[in-house]
Amino acid sequence: MRTFLKLTCWMLICVLLCGSAHFALADQMLDMEREFAKTESLSGMVDIPGMVQPVRYYAQNDTLWQHLVYERKESKKRRPFRDSGCGPTAFAMALNALVDDDQLVLLGEFAKRPYSLCTCSLNDAQCDRHSARYQITSVRDYVRFLPLVLGDFAAGNNTFGVYSRSETVAGTSTGYIGKVCEIFGLEYQFTYDYQDAVAALKDEQASVFALAGNGGCFTTVGHYVYLAHADDQFLYVLDPLARENYKTNHASKLNIITPGLVSLRHEDVTFAQFSNFIILTK
Image (tube, rainbow, N blue to C red; front, side, top):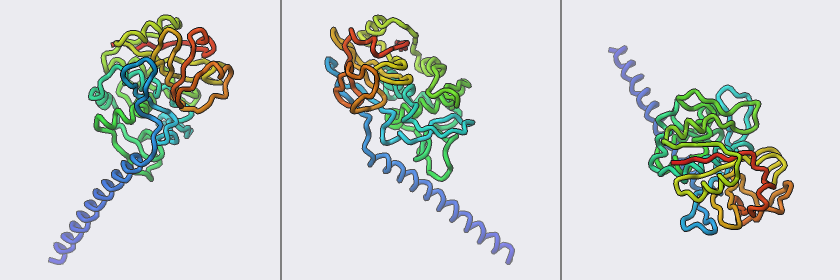
């Protein structure tokens, strides 16, 4: 009888503890959501001169996620997304322009583990385990955190076995782009011809992002940007690194409309040092 009572007591204690843990975790998740909700974001919808509809803009240095560690599982480094997340961020803008919001959740079907983030890392593999994780599940989540989802995908959280983030390269290599396009039935091509890129910008079924090279007006190292629009005089660029000013060579060639949105005259595009353009097409 005593043994039975002891077992019953232990079972009740375990149920209470597990139940408390469940509610504690739920509370932590809600706390994280409130934390993200109260933080001012640099990302959002932006009006581009000459375009009827606003365009979604993402900033790699968004205060919501700029400090989150962006590494693959095996990495010993702790580099933040703000310093090297331009590739996934520019790609996110290009992808968002072509893919309906409710289709973005398809990315979750090709992940090795659920996409999630916490206050320290954009992926589960690099989390310090002291922070509650916020799992990305809804359409709203995928739209809101798309650059981080693509960053996690590039860092190896995909069923294709693709790793586009390494310790030896500062940014993100392009191997993951084709696999993401495959998920959404998009075609993609690399071109070195600026006129091809401008022609694609006039096609509603295409979007373009580009790698700006070292020594140009955008960067002193290498930097991906999203080409949002072009008219007869100007190229309009959404820069993933939202800046109020540029301390680069030929910075005077850029007209800052608002942090993250700049224009550049076509005749001055050589000062951007674009090394290649990536065109996505439906």
